[in-house]
Length: 106
Length: 448
Image (cartoon, rainbow over the protein chains, first blue to last red):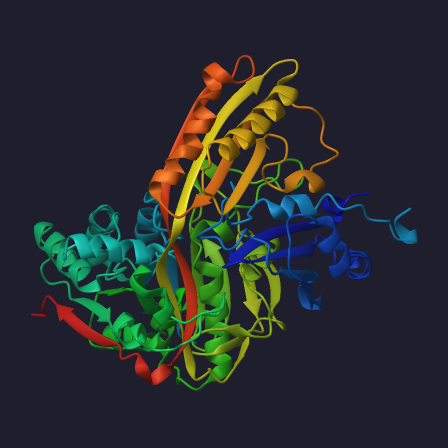
């Protein structure tokens, strides 16, 4: 299945840094996010977009992860040459990640 | 327990106006906040002010004030806004004039000034956070330097009886925190209350983004009534208890999902959301749906504020030239790629001096690049886009021209060419010792 089936997401911007939240629709899927949506995987998914590091923050209370991606906005929102200078559309791209269902979901 | 209701009437400078009026008329609110100041808006407004000393405030100030002042005055709703941009005093004078013309001359209007720290910073060696260099090194490219002020001067203005408080650069959540501090007398070192108040302000500051805007994804996240989206109301108790809701019958939805998305919007480390008044901690926040369109938010905390204020520095960065043209039907993708190759070669042949260039196909890979988009199917139509950064407007213009000449010199059937060239006012940041910014309040209007 796709990440989109179990989670929703929103992108925010500050300077040249983009953050993407990944929020499980249901608490029971949070462990899948923790296990499979790693910083390394997000960094690999955004090859060619994110130049810097990807740091993951965990928010178990709301079953959410927050990815902070530096060097992700073409030199900064206010100077970027990109069509989507804010990177608003990145969240949708991340939801395309493949997720292995947990055995209980089969 | 005492409770106040704060409406969020705008999430950015160009936002819809009638949802704010709806909040004033039907929202049972005591405060209406308009957050209208983007990262670089102050720098652009500063440019306007340099040309004309009475300008430099939000271009929609008059329209917004004319729309809401009669209702707000009748109901005693107080307004807090950063529509002052680069010139809060001129914005306050203009608002006083509008109030008089509406027969509302008793309204008391406050301008908060002192966020402009250009003179303090200009010759200093404060290091720029985003790249190597200091403010001084920006030389004559430097346009503006504005400190993100906290809630205190705005709360003080409310305390002095202001009906309308107009500020320039202030932290967005502080616009909402100010009414809480004023109404409840929160201490400026009660870090947990200020942290929870910051959660409230942060959730409300983008207006429609918590009531279903920037959220809908048909089939996955459906939202009804986006064309008449209701803007949010924060119901805040004096102990920081918070419920997010909206006007009954308005479009959109307030759900746990919309609140969670907005909670993390533009947040980095959730334990350390740096604000002028507090270091807010969002990590323990809980989100609970208690009724339709009513979501309880608890658990915001805070720790002691830092000794510095973030200063947003506006400067002329470069120029950007751009051109676009479309291809459709069988072979559109191949013709689009050929067009890009032609422009790439032309820019080289004619010696256009660009420090950075992008060649992309809108509809294929313009948003996320060729790697992320590699598995996409071939589209019916594509739009060629070439953009480049230059040191002068003259060079920038040449980029769009090279795309436009594809009409008669490029692949078959290219249509809808478009070009632009513009200067880029960009924003960087420095940290200023907090005591070097000295906010002040100026008052207009009178009480009987």
